[in-house]
Image (cartoon, rainbow, N blue to C red):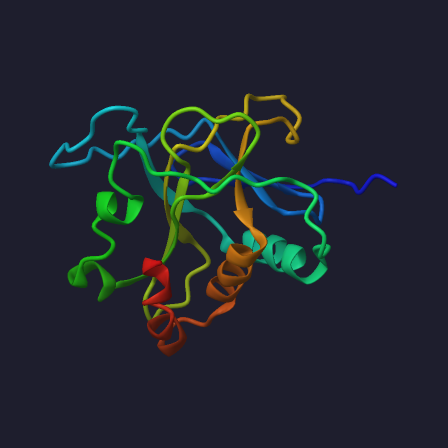
Length: 196
């Protein structure tokens, strides 16, 4: 029996959106669609197949939190998709590109970096990476993001096309905890995990 695919589109404040999909299988597939804010990196240490870096704010993290938690709670134990570990090629990891590992940054924000993401289907170019950030010590509905190397999902395309970046089940569990954690001491406790 075919398991229906659950799809969530999360708009970015600056324009565009992320599309997340899962069918209770190996992981949460991720695409971007029409993101508009490219980050001007300085100093420019990019070469080779380095992918553009996008940044911005997701207006409401609650739908994403509920989507990830639903996947973690109901995903099947037998993986259905053969996942390929991502590789960082010819570019710095997203944590270094955003300076999110700097003490001055971690004083104000808590991060969850997924770098690199697994992939499914044929893949070319720099590995997909996604980093989420929350303001430390404050309860906000929004969540910041940086993304690079994610495939573009054209408007009107079915969200089960390949290739896709994939948040594995293990990483989805860590992401669910991060999104459910109250601001304050719990985010402080999770700060070291964000650098993995």
